[in-house]
Length: 254
Image (tube, rainbow, N blue to C red; front, side):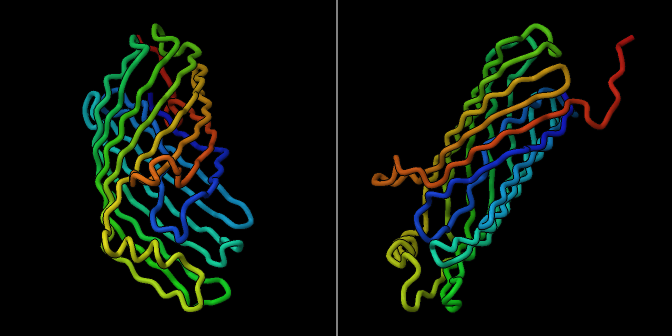
């Protein structure tokens, strides 16, 4: 089950309130089953105004127990909003899965800790800025269904439904908005109460051939304030390809 996963297509449709103050992490499924299994996955998106990437790693520290780490970089040059955004986040989590080759339905669950930082700076009015730093704890559940379950190497179509809830505490908030350019009312509200809840919901469809897996994914992210519960803050759309046994030569059992 060892494989390397590289995402070929990834598009971020940014709908967040101004200014950006949180780095959303794409939702991923590990497919880890037993001790020693590992996976590496990444997403990358670029346009004239964005250069964003995410790198994830999963390792089976024991049978059905998973250690996960993720780093995300955000670099957006939002000319329409007259500022650019640079930031990063880092997460680490411990997870459990009941996946097996004889089950159609299986669940992955994670609990983890992360930190991040974002710096928004004015493009034309360079004295304007809005900086944010935060810590978070989060929990994620992945509900997965495989159409085939009898033989691992069979062509398999799978559906994945990840859900993440995160509690954010901002430990750094500072800004200058001379002559406008930033949503100062939102910033002041966050200073008064530097805590937020985030919810992320996704859907991933994957198809695995003998040693190659293709996937399409979409995820939606929102704050959980009552007035914003159904106002999604970010939308991620992507596609990927995975190679099983990428670093080793498969041998037949004797």
